[in-house]
Length: 115
Length: 113
Image 1 (cartoon, rainbow over the protein chains, first blue to last red):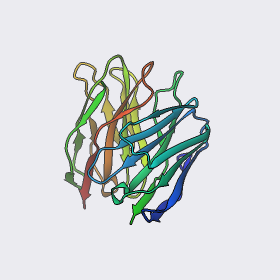
Image 2: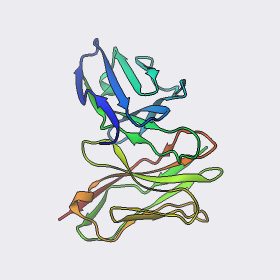
Image 3: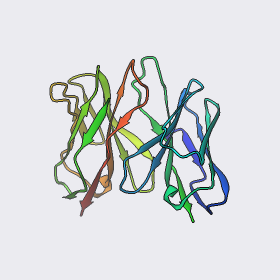
Image 4: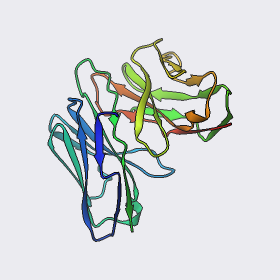
């Protein structure tokens, strides 16, 4: 139990569907992240929310839309996805400032399959 | 910019063998260094960390020493077990700089009985 919970753990969707991934952290952190992990590729940072400010990887397609309503919750809204978007989507949280050393706490991931 | 370089995998070992996974980094200032482990079907979890030069991080029999002179943070274990089979990620985070950590590509370890 890492204190970061992701739902659903598995999701299968068609290319025309709209779905959302949810992440919740119970650690009191002030930064949350979405990463994409595809087979044979490096971990790809997609979005970061820290102190209500958003940082994004400019290479992420607009069919991925993040939402962070508060410091404990993070969503990734998915629409009109492509088969190459099939991957493990990892949420993480951290404490972004002060004396903390910056380690991330990850959820177990949401395995997405796009048909 | 910051970067982390890990040795290519997979690393395949027999049980009780000695493990080394190399990691070198490039960063300005004084980063904190981390090793994360990802077991099959799970997310990443912190294995160990070191926050300043010559610090040694250790956990579950794994060790890594922060070597500023060689900009390295190699992961070692004296006797691996089948249950250590996983993907290992080296990472850094700079205090006072960007709060976004930099990860290596990951090294897969396979341990045979």
